[in-house]
Length: 204
Image (cartoon, rainbow, N blue to C red; front, side, top):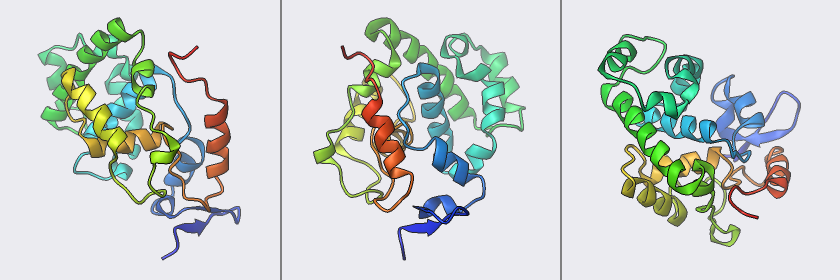
């Protein structure tokens, strides 16, 4: 099977984004483009945690509900959530109501605050784990890597939950730490240009 499909504009794209109509815009404008914003990085780590055992389509369909329920993924606010907030979220059908994952996001918010206090930003810490291009496998042939295992280990050492190497690899793909669009994908070059122009956080 081809690694690409032809989009509505007659350009080839990664085949996975043909699986649902809402995937096309996400693929073209978000997936793989580098992100340095702490809130967006925390949001994606949180949504990847919720995705465990589910499909990305389910999570993407509920993303706005998650953003509302978790106050825009402001981890300073989430770190102050109490048991009543857990119960509120367990009753919110605009999100995935999984107590363990909800509690993990609240717990991870506290971890994020501590990390930012120590490192200056979540982005600086995460982007230190950007892999060398020479270490990457061919696009979309792996579900984890040495770099994702290292970042997973570093996060777990700081107490984070639901951040295994496979979850972290999906996060790295989405947040632009690697360009995992297949070679023939029309968006790969766009992502490449964005990564070339991107100022890595924490670097002079």
